[in-house]
Image 1 (cartoon, helix red, strand yellow):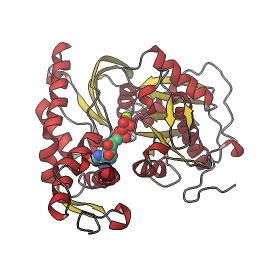
Image 2: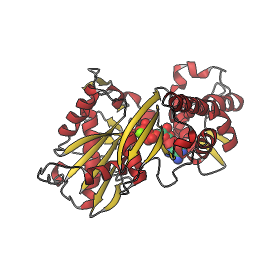
Image 3: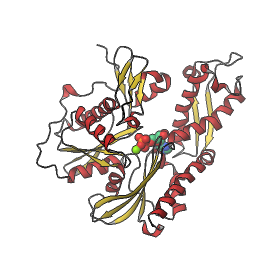
Length: 391
Ligand code: ADP
Ligand code: MG
């Protein structure tokens, strides 16, 4: 089998091509993607993905997350709860191992003929080398890197050797990345790329918390106007972020959602002794009004990149939307409408980078290297979905 791996800052995805068919190998918990998060408990056990992400909200000093941002730097990742220190390469290797385990489980350990790991277009040589070392550390041997926008374009083109110009609009958890790519008979090049380092889905969660949850709390409970400054409320704020994110994702398909956390989860009383909980209704319209301005920023940057490269809207065949927030209907409408470019409706924002990478792996000249055996069962990640192992 050939593998395509989207190693994301927030979420990672692994896809494979087996006998010409493409398949996404999901995490054991059944989620669509694997959050790139590791949780360390005091006894040395680790949890990965969704469960680690949920723990991150409750015990932020016991998790490693966001380590992709540190690839190629010497900055260590500290886990204060356990006193451990890891490198971003080690953390990345663990996520890779977890993903390889997903593929091995679903394919009965099929041999790997080649794996392609994607990296941002903006990654420099040090960041690339660090990613390669992480892949080696995870046990991959036939491996090569590919820029994310190229992978995205490949998933849109599939096996067709088409030509065309594409805008890759990638809005992730914490960053916006835009690329102009050019395909000539299936061969794809990045013409230009630009980004905003501090704009993504997490900002939208923060806006929901600040503009909707906080006013609701001070209206419904006896607590100070600026309660978030007080340390005892930090846990509540983190729970609010997690609940806001869930509601936000619901609003991509529903007109209305509830930002909810029970008093059992919150475990805190207000100044009059009442148990605090969250049950905040939010409409899609309310949410859209909050995010319009940051979306306009992404559109302005896109216009600027097109102008600098002498692209008119009629020169662009399609916009390809990548990243979780690109599932938001308003974002697709606004971006396509403002730029006057058609949307490619075939590609899924969350999985297409991995799928494109898998297509690339299947066509790459692997130079006659022998296929590496799959991940042997004893080397696979051990954490089953709902049990913490007890040794
Ligand atoms: P990254 O490239 O940073 O790894 P992703 O593309 O996985 O990130 O995007 C993560 C972000 O996408 C998170 O902020 C998450 O809340 C958001 N997200 C995921 N699914 C949806 C959805 N259906 N609608 C809106 N936002 C979503
Ligand atoms: Mg991404």
